[in-house]
Image (cartoon, rainbow, N blue to C red; front, top):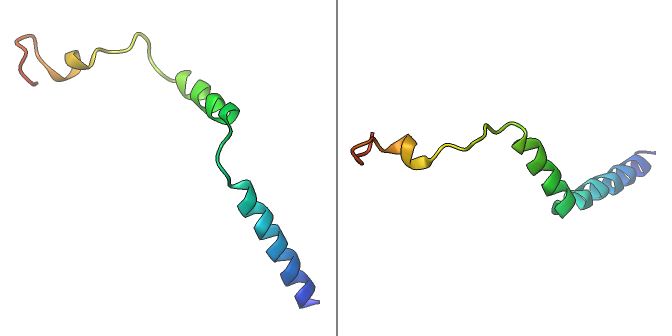
Length: 58
């Protein structure tokens, strides 16, 4: 009985490992869409964030 359980666990583990492959393009685009919903628009200009009006770092 323990051998049957061990074999079943090995097969299931192998299935899980095979499912961990690379994400498809559709999955990546879905992730990007969900992340984009949380971004503030319009985007801030990076130079405004890091440099003062005199052009020197803040």
